[in-house]
Image 1: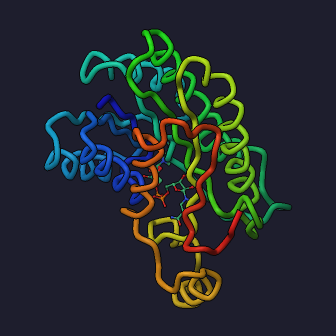
Image 2 (image 1 turned 120 degrees about the vertical axis):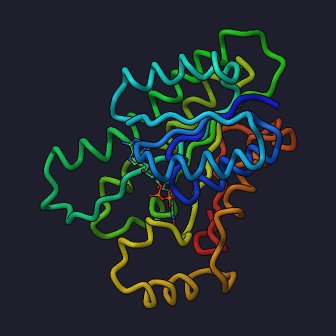
Length: 248
Ligand SMILES: NC(=O)c1ccc[n+]([C@@H]2O[C@H](COP(=O)([O-])OP(=O)(O)OC[C@H]3O[C@@H](n4cnc5c(N)ncnc54)[C@H](O)[C@@H]3O)[C@@H](O)[C@H]2O)c1
């Protein structure tokens, strides 16, 4: 078992992923831009393992990110798993979105994923192969059908999948696997962008093949699979976790 970094770990899915990776036996470094929710996650993970370390980092700040990745090996050991999970999802009509709005979404959801993958990848390639090393990028069901007023977000999620394939190609010879997980609709803070929760819930259930809402733990279980030994020959893939809403 190795050292896992989870970004956006203060959020619901990030917390579930951090918990699950700790339960799998990994040491876990968690990060988020929001101190309070990150602390809650670190507390929850510390009930599973004492090998947990948290640090507030804004993914837009490349200096802080580099310092974070430098610190992880000193505290827990060299990074062997990265889950790029943090995201922002402002709802703005496309024709009204300013370049600054777009830059923010891109800086977190795409450039942030890129920088983390690069910083983690450098640590992973700096030592001999042997342990299982991998990266999981969190995409979104919205990349398939688009979503009104989320064009920037949807764009970055499509980019996360394209980046997954490019990095899988380039890092595979180093023994590093790179996959993506694409969540459908999970009940997290992200759902608050939908103004009528009951109508949204009904719409989700109508579109899903499975007539119940998925849980964060079920999403985390797929991340666990992708980072674990049963997926040792799986790379460059995107796993849809959406109750059969989109079948890709
Ligand atoms: N919930 C869903 O239904 C759903 C659907 C599709 C995809 N996703 C994806 O799942 C992932 C987790 O989403 P969630 O639903 O748990 O949402 P969330 O908002 O609860 O979690 C996102 C986390 O990212 C953090 N974050 C935002 N800006 C940051 C920054 N600049 N630096 C560092 N951290 C930052 C937030 O503080 C938050 O804790 C995201 O990538 C999201 O796009 C979620």
